[in-house]
Length: 176
Image (tube, rainbow, N blue to C red; front, side, top):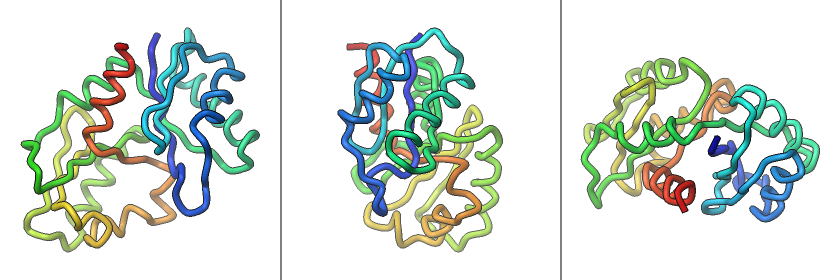
């Protein structure tokens, strides 16, 4: 079965790693057809194991090799398609759209945080198929009240976010 591992906190705040090294860690852990997509920690691979087993194996392998507490989220090809096909917002050049990959139930936690934040009137959020999506004007991602909440220590190991265009790239890599 084909999967994508979405790594949390890669190449930010001092956690730097080369994707060629990450891919080798995945191969050494028994994954096949391993390839990376952009340098932010998106690894496509094949395995006969399930998502729970893969998360345990890969977090342990990544933590040991890179000497950090690895957090990653595994999604099947079918789930990755759902992220791409469920986008509730129209794609425009003026906005970024992010989808959040994470622990079960994180979408409701993020929606509550979004609703409590003082957001710019042009920001939007929606949950579709248990996926939290956030639309924010370009240039405002890190400065928005909700953007600042996303770095809270109590939340950060529960999810990772990707620009929606990343899912398209992941799916193309899965099918090439």
